[in-house]
Image (cartoon, rainbow, N blue to C red):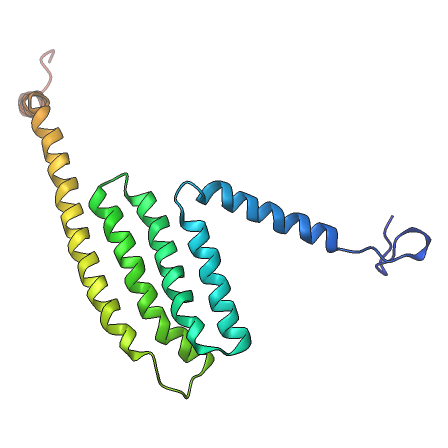
Length: 180
């Protein structure tokens, strides 16, 4: 039984390291299981490693591959989720994630080195990719709308039935109940 002083039986301190290692491995394997079908996990891990090295060692050049891989990994993950609605939504998510990755380059560099300008060039391809992503999202919206309208047109007799019921109920309300 552990006392309030943090020592276990016989006065020995208990280590939290095994618990932390098990929780870390559990989180890693859960993420691997959830994200491995998308292929995003290696991109996110490598992007995190590059970004971590850039922040810890001060090597500014590692911000570029780190943020691009993080943005692309997030886009692939979002594309796997949104791709079920429309393929254009999935493509828009991947291209938009890549565009956000380019936009993250100057932002992450400014976090580490606030007084040193640089990496402003990355906003140009980032903006172009985000514009392409917006166009693909517009195509995806048109596709979803067309499918929805197609579904409505397929079941147009239901609209006749609903319209007839509306007329019937409206006429019953005006005349009142037939039993009075």
